[in-house]
Amino acid sequence: MKIAVCQSNPIIGDIKGNKEKILAGYKRAVSENAELVVFPELFLCGYPPLDLVEKKEFRGAVNKASLEIATQTNNTALLFGTITEDYEDSIGTGVYNSAVLCYDGKIQFVQSKTLIPNYDVFDEVRYFESAKDVFVHEFNGEKLGISVCEDIWNDADYWKHRRYTVDPIQKLIDNKAEILINISASPYAYGKRKERYEMLKRLTKDDKVPLIYTCCVGAQTELIFDGGSMCLNSDGGLCLLGKNFEEDFFIYDTKKNYPSVENVEASFEEEVLKALIMALKDYAVKTGFKKALVGLSGGIDSALVTYIAAQAFGKENVHVIMMPSKYSSEGSVEDSRKLIQNLGISSDKISIQSVVDKALEMLRPAFNGKGDDVTEENMQSRIRGLYLMSLANKHGYLLCTTGNKSEIATGYATLYGDMCGAVSVIGDVYKTQVYGICNYINRNEEIIPKEIIIKVPSAELRPNQTDQDSLPPYDLLDRILKMYLEEQKEYDEISEAVREPETVRKVLRLVDMNEFKRKQSAPVLRVSTKAFGYGRRYPIVQGWRR
Image 1: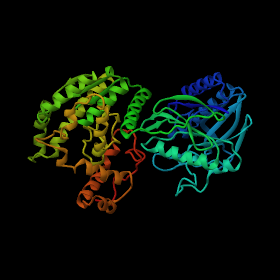
Image 2: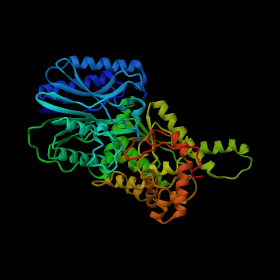
Image 3: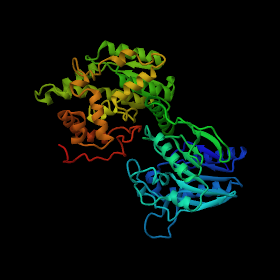
Image 4: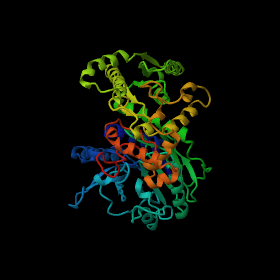
């Protein structure tokens, strides 16, 4: 069977636009003699639709669009993800995350999702019912086993510990499915594509059945979808691999032999850089922003964010502002100028010192003689935030925050200061990884000035300040943070691993006590298995660690 894979990028809630994409992909596939055309999970409404699902009018519009799409089909079948409803049972929502198969002018078959995830970034139990059963559908002489995303992530031969007792794919195999088709919207994290491939390889090889895995691409606020759709033969060989971080269209012929695809994932630096550029660009396109603003400090974090913005928006659409104070080194300003020249972007330099001095003068009486402390440092950052927000408002810029995951985790960032912005570009990238990505950017030529990369990190809010005055060395800090945030390890396990119990105690306390800041921060683009955002739900007020 000739199956067209439409690895496309929907917009959540844009039913008209998503419908047009489906019909355009279908028309192209028909012209190339495909027998079946496949789009990703919930493509018609966009994934994840979240509380839009709870609106009756929204569901009605989605269902109406599904029927309209079906009328446009001929003897070439079209499979796409959408919402369906069934209120025969008075218990539950009556709403399903479904794969809808259309041909000959109408909907011929619906297979709803059986395994409804409720962990990490997933909260589908809130909206969807589980499928009542699993069926095989015969089309053009082939028995199709159709499933939706999570249904394929429960293979008994691959997973030692499974989340679910039900295995929908095994049911399809038992029902003599000859071709497996999985429509997916699987959020990206580095390493997941390789794991996905290994799982699908094991499944197809063991069950001796080809598989078409169609994955979504693009970004929806925090969540990134990497594409990388896969077609595997009945021997577990990867025949075709969709492009990563961009839309793609290709046709897989189950009767044809293909050379094996061996490499499914690039280096961390290459992958994550591509993911962040695509995600920032998608965020801007889908929210209507055409230009970006970054506060450029002369440090490595703002340099990396500026580079990503230039790639996402185009250099002519990126503006940076340098905001020196009396503590800013001349080197920081000069290093920023070099980066501005290398990237070909526009800039302003506006000192904050006179505003800081005036604010301190006005506040001194209310400080009641108390000496200088972190208050004065934070004032500088907040005045910079004032400048940034003012320029963003005046010129319609998308303001990008520049904090990395290490800083956001430990609270080494100022609320209403450098945390101001619409999107946190590198908030899921540890400081040590920032260095790695910058060195990758410079692999062929110096784009980010070497002076920025080699300088000792500093917030430059007091004389001779360095990050390590307040934080452990980043190599150690990031190791602790990864174990705590992503591996769910606690004090005893981490202390045993790093052999510095007091440092561990300090770091974990910093993470916990700064939860209130993260609740008020910009959405973080997710590239790890556990990013700050709605995938990590931690109480602000708690007594586990004080």
